[in-house]
Length: 428
Image (cartoon, rainbow, N blue to C red):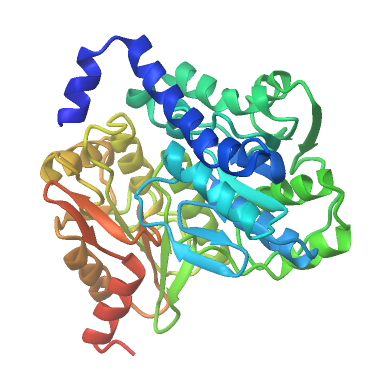
């Protein structure tokens, strides 16, 4: 693409200056001259949430807790923008908006009398200085796993990018279950708050399944406790939290279950598969069973299958993880359907080749799988395969409203496609 070509031609310092200029300009336009009160974030408490996974859920949890505590809030996540009572979809295909947009958002939040802004902060956003000239009251760290390696030029640079948020935040909330907890904790010069599943004395009964969701809830609880909120409000809000669209969202319940989830990293994919098998008491398929049905039936496990639809992003993004995701799917799924996700300008067949390599590398006989490039057809195929009480899990896009192809964005929503195909197949 032209943008990538130009980026390679320009010296790094010029690119850095370019990225630094825009947030400064945004802070000036939406702060200094018109309002004489400094940049917008001086007039509102900003909480930034970063990590490889869990950011969106934690942002929504914190937002709900603050609202239930009586605060007027604004928030930005990969799914939505929210200012007070007004919400609208995030259609940018980027979690963290550009420098001018984010400053304008904060100004609008201040003008709407919001006391808090809760922002999902990404490594790409930090790399492009979108966090600059924002005064962060609190930074929240969820976890760190390999991601965006090509974009950052290595895992170390990815970690360092995340760390920039903690250098400028007044205080930090740290997941002490993560191996990089000390690194992020040491970067923050202010007060630090920690949480851990291993020493959790905050008793919660969540509606959401999975240890990863409990960890997300503890992150949100810790952030709100750091702001002095009442534990009763925090507990009630989290226990009534019904989840985030496209995150472990059950779209169909009968005669089989269909779940849509955003998981697009190896770590997230494995956690999703494990959580589903535990929640629905499915057995673990073994390499000695071609279809994963007739052997290794553990005590109490049901003879139902897990049907998995997955792909991987194109455009050269994190090619390393494709075979890893294939290997994980082979370990956990009875039936796999490989399909398109967000191919961008890359050939979908080549992306699927990379995932398939991970499936076929999983010891000898492997789980049954097939390739269906068209994502709608792949979802239809999964619904046709599923039997009563089976579970179909569709990963990679969640509630994203578009698919990125070589011809540009195409309107899309995995959940709506499932509903349409389910109704068309008359499976009720």
